[in-house]
Image 1 (cartoon, helix red, strand yellow):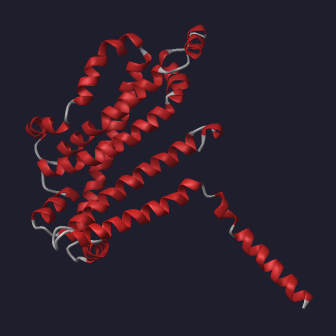
Image 2 (image 1 turned 180 degrees about the vertical axis):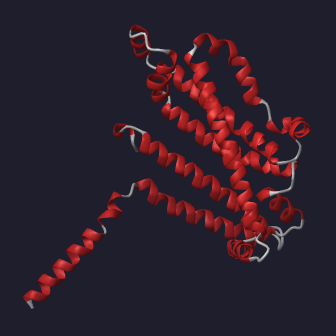
Image 3 (image 1 turned 60 degrees about the vertical axis):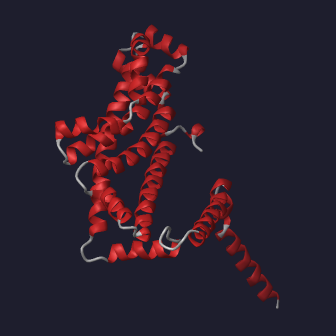
Length: 274
């Protein structure tokens, strides 16, 4: 009997040790589950309240998603690959241009003050207003889509990078001047590390804006990608497939911003990690 109790204590202890990782999960992660459950229940309620054909519930949407995946024509997979390739290309272009221009304007206060109204005007300009001009210059192909996505994503990156560099500690600026560090060296060793949180915030905002702009690009240029499926299913009132494509966009945005957050956490100093 004693050996049985000892065995049970050892098993319970090992089981408790196996579950220790649960206590290390942050509280906000656990709170996401009830929020997700509430959203799921609201989705079901809305599908039951609205007339048939106006809205699809979770079950119909999930069924439609797997039916599109199993389709022999692979329209959904081809559209998904097209959208992801164009989106990533446009976002990378926006990230490079936005960080470089933001670092350039933010590191030279005179230029920053001179171009401030023009930068704000460009940030307020709707990208959709430029699409006819872009189509005239580049046509309806992938080049126009990449440029449209880049234009939609570049301003948050630029503005946040510039703001982060302008917020650099004045003592660090004086130290860089005292040691006669070159302009490139200041950007590399002082400005960009100090502005890193702002840059990552701008990249997350740019990623979301670029994804939204990719839908607009599909609507107004060549009908390819998930935007073309979105328009086709919406026009034919196939709401189950329509919502499946909408949820795919939401998943892409969630995964991409999550990867950027992980990258920020990995590249941040240990004292700043969350």
